[in-house]
Structure formats: structure tokens, C-alpha cells
Image (cartoon, rainbow, N blue to C red; front, side):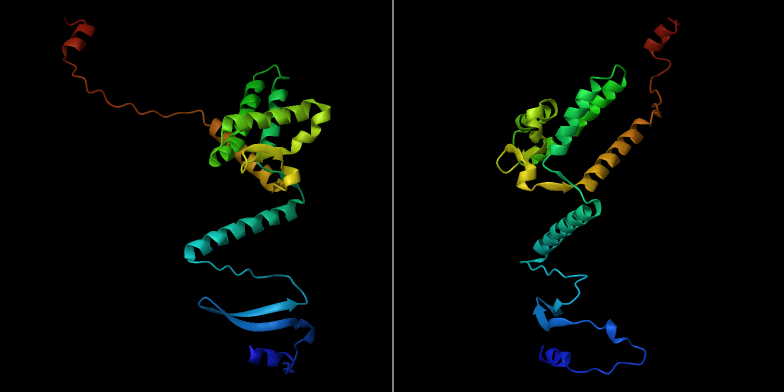
Length: 231
């Protein structure tokens, strides 16, 4: 590090045609050994277009898991910046959509009512799965969640219940907007679109090819002879 620090203040000769404006500045440049790697660490740069995250763990398995978690977190932040919108998590959006679609389905007097009602039921798979993964009672918690969102859409004084989602640590429902449990709106919209398109594609397959196994019955058996009137 002494060689690096002494070279910071030195005037390096520039090759012809090189613009000095291309050079950057930093408060500290050092060399450090982390695990089995020698790293050059640059701190306090004037411009900060990028940064590095160094993960350290007991073994490769822990580090790989940390890497996946950090990657997922950064992707979530990226989606928020791209969409510039967030929605409450913990099954809040799915429960609200389920209630809204159920009420909308009852206003139709055609066969579309059945399709919309089934779609509303499919929305509850997400909160049910979240509750089951947390080893809680999915029937009770999802029923409470649906009651909150039904009140938010039908009672003017309880509109604030639209932010209610699941608190899986304590096994209850809470205001997830207030608790800071949020999801990128873009990811939520895309996941619903892709799932719907996949379901539509499967429903469009209306042909079935069935191969019948060849009959192994003896044509000269007693049953066949009686059936054909030979006896």
C-alpha cells in the first residue's frame, strides 16, 4: 500500500493524445488480502457510478447463499427504480384482487362469471402458500385477510384496510405499508400476466390423442362365441 500511496501524488507522464480529463481521483487506494485473494480497494472516489460488495462467510455454501440473497435484493431495488411504484406485500394485492373479482363476477349474467370467479379463487394461492411456508393456519389467516379487504372495498370508513397483509412472524394480519413490507409493482404485474398467459395457453389445447392398447382376448373364447351367436 505504501507504493500505491506514494504514487498518488507523483506526476505520471501522459502519452501523446491522452486527455487528462479522463483521470479520476480517490481519497484512498490500498491493497488488502481477503481470504485467498489480493484486492485493490479504492475508497472515496469523486464520481460513484459503481461499487463493490465483498461477502465473507464460514464456507462456500454460506457465501453462495449470501450471494443469492444480495442478488435478489439488488434486483428488487432495480425493479422499484424502473417502475417507480411499489405495492404492499404479504398477499395484500392477491387478496384485494380476489375480493374485487368475486364481486365483479356476480354482476355478470353469462358464462364469463364462472371464469372470473375461478380466477379470483386462483389469486388466493399466493397468500395460502405464504402462510403454509410459515407453518401457520392458512384457513384462518386467509379468511381474516379476505374479511379486511372486503371491508375496505365495501365500507367507506374502512378504506384504510386496503393496505392489510400477512404478518407471518406473529401469525396475524397487519398494515404492511406501515410495516414497510413492499414489492415492486412491475414484478407483481408481470408475474400475474405471465401466469394468466400460461393458463390461457393450456386451456386452448382442446385435442387429445389416445392410443388404445391392442386387445388380448382370444377370438375363439367361449364369451366371444356366445356374444357373436356361434353357440
